[in-house]
Structure formats: C-alpha cells, structure tokens
Length: 152
Image (cartoon, rainbow, N blue to C red; front, top):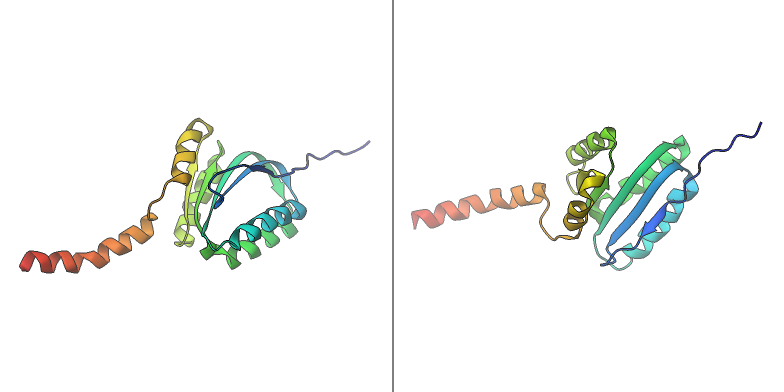
C-alpha cells in the first residue's frame, strides 16, 4: 500500500502594487513551502515598504511542528514589517485566529473574509488607511488639541 499525501505548493497570486503578497493555500504545508514564501517576502522587504498579505485558504489540512516553528520565528522577527493581512476562507477557526492576532499584535491589522467576500477583501487589502489601533491612538492624541481650540 502506498500512502500519498496531498502536498501544497503555495501559489503566488499576482498583485499590484508589489507591497501586497497574494497567496493561495490549499493542503499540507511543509517547511520548504514556508521557505519559498520567506524568500519572496525578503525580496520585497528590500524595497523598504511595509508589506501586506492577502491569503486565500481553501483547505489547509496541516502543518508539521518544524514548519510551524519556522513560520512563527520568521513572523515574529518581521511583525513590524507588515501592516495588514486579509485571510479569505470559509473556515471558522481562521476567523477566530484573525481576532486573536489583532489582540496579540497591534502593529498589524488582520481581517477575515469569506469566499463570498473576495472583492471586499481585495478592496480592503489594497486600500490605504490607518489601522484601527493606530487611528485610535491618533484620535486620543488629537483630543487635547481639539479641547484647547474650543476654549480659545
């Protein structure tokens, strides 16, 4: 009996502008898959812009511990190099993961979209705006200035 496992080649989804990295994920993720994506990210980081990730996750079946550690290590080292991530998936646990990511990592805004919302996800990842955490900080900073203008 021959065991055949579905192996993923993470496919790059072309995007313009170049600071958006599009990925199609479907299947089993290995360390080699992560390494290919890391090379793409490192090349884009050399341009000096903050990056955005757009990921369509069809069927992420599993990831080895070695792969998870490699991905986590790279992600934590470069967390401030990313400003947004759109996750498109019909899997509820990824929706929860997006919410947890927003709580743990305030420097990157993560949103979950369903496959019915692909157009909305593409519009959001391409749009320029201050992430919610940053805009709240700026609004708080502006409050004293607005208050003093009212007194003048």
